[in-house]
Length: 116
Image 1 (tube, rainbow, N blue to C red):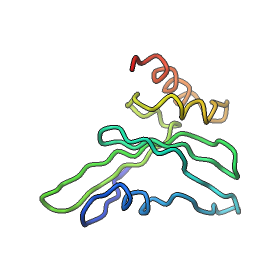
Image 2: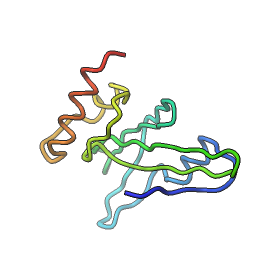
Image 3: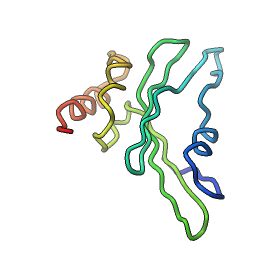
């Protein structure tokens, strides 16, 4: 998994426009990202597919202010991110299902067991 990046002044709005809030999939599916929650250098969100809850995603953001560049690493819950500060409301919005797999299940358990 590599990093993507942009040059210029960082802003939350610029980041969201760079990753896209909604888009059409290859098979005609419609995707939409909702409920963006910023925590430190991470932003969490819920992704919906054809109007239905699909999965929880995160982007890790690194900013080099001196070089006026910022990089982000995008991942979803199926890879079991090693960050557990995901807002629990996102897990409620997108219920776990078998097709998300074991990494997702383990990750969700750690998020739910983390004390806020």
